[in-house]
Image (cartoon, rainbow, N blue to C red; front, side, top):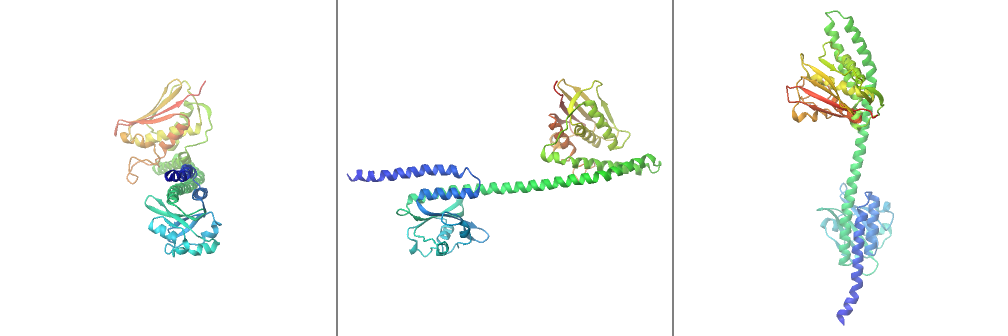
Length: 420
């Protein structure tokens, strides 16, 4: 008879505990569904108050700078009022929970000397019972959750276990939310810094282009009219100006490398037209009469749909790269292979060659095989990166081949023909 009576009494309690455990699983999903700290705190408070059947739930977080606990959220009063009240680690129940990293159950706070009355007096709250547990991230205590004034009866061991689970979930969820917010803030700051850098480069390249154009014009006239004695000096000025223009062109295209996007003004053209523009640009940029470049282009026009100036940049950069690494007496051959629905352009040189491990790296931004302090070739290391991005935006492919140092290199560009 006694056993049946005990079982009858215990059955509702077991059902209630089972309901609360099921609710705890639901709460876990809710806490992990938001990364907004304020909303997260409210979810924690509402869930804990419902499960523990208490009047007030408060969350206090440790302030590393002030070395004290501060209210982060509560169900009792306006949080702005509580935020102004620090809770010391010494001589307070919350401080004891935090420093000793253990839970406390006080079903009569009036008899406990550690009860910190200042908070209750400030907000007009009479605290009669308290259950508090630490919030932990791994082995580090980050704060405290307090449940105040149990509505029916006293706080039980089952209440302690419920609040410990909620505290664990809350600490992890809040930590993740803070990490995501910090990452978002860092990304915003990085984006702003990148925009400032891009704007600066755009303004600088624009402002320098006009005076540099004048310098190039006068340098060309000076070279053409110079006496034999002064021609080397005039040639040096023209060459230096041409290098500076190439640097400005690279800077102007930096935005392409940062965003991987560019506004393409596609027009119907031919590969021959693209390569003719590139050939003339290289001739003007290098200002040499002995360019060791052989162009093997078919007479039959090969149609392309491209952004003509941008595609011209691709082949200018590839040809200048070949010239930069091909010594006097070397050869550079540009050849074309019609492949039906696509066309391949190969630029082969007899220059210094490329190591196997550098065949992919040479397309990276600012990559230089030689040390920047001792290298003998100029350039920012952007030409090949810009070429790769422009080819990619046109739906094409680009790669390099070399049998090793001292054996020259071949750069291949494959572009699709327009349909129909």
